[in-house]
Length: 197
Image (cartoon, rainbow, N blue to C red; front, side):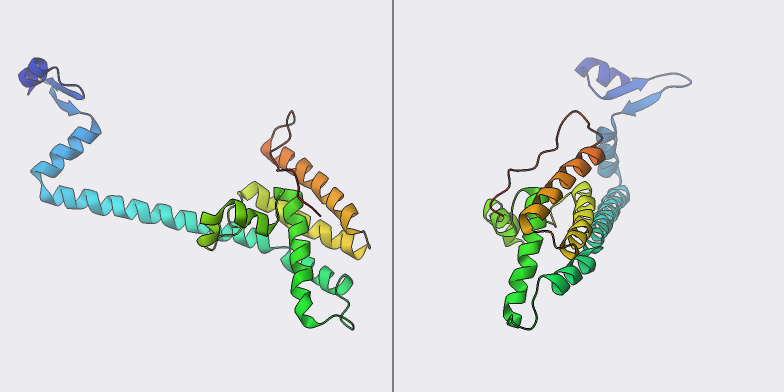
């Protein structure tokens, strides 16, 4: 092996003679050689790769579950405030309630992401076709801020702040919190310019 490595100028393969000698190879070469020599080793390598991918997939699923739980933490607080203060039950048909909730969710989406749910779907049609939402695709920092904004908006609704005033407060809060969570005090995190309120 040593002679062959020297003659061919093999890269990734070292052969040494003597007491502490042996043949050493880059792991990719060693794996290929091992799979060529032993079908059992090849099967072991394939099974181990599959196990690692499943573990990775499970970890990603747990992170996604955590992120969605985080996003839903203050959802009830927010919707209760909308129900109590913004939906006049006596003179509003039940069908329009959905629109009021959606408007409030979009107010927070605009403050945090700079887009409404509909604008996001138009901008990212591929993800929308996969039944993903703007909140499904948000990173953990934005989901933390989203949870905080839902709670803050509930307080502002209960204190009878107008929509424009709430939006300004929510947007400023989103920028401040994202800046703090990103650990950057010299720049404002990227938030798209908001659409119409």
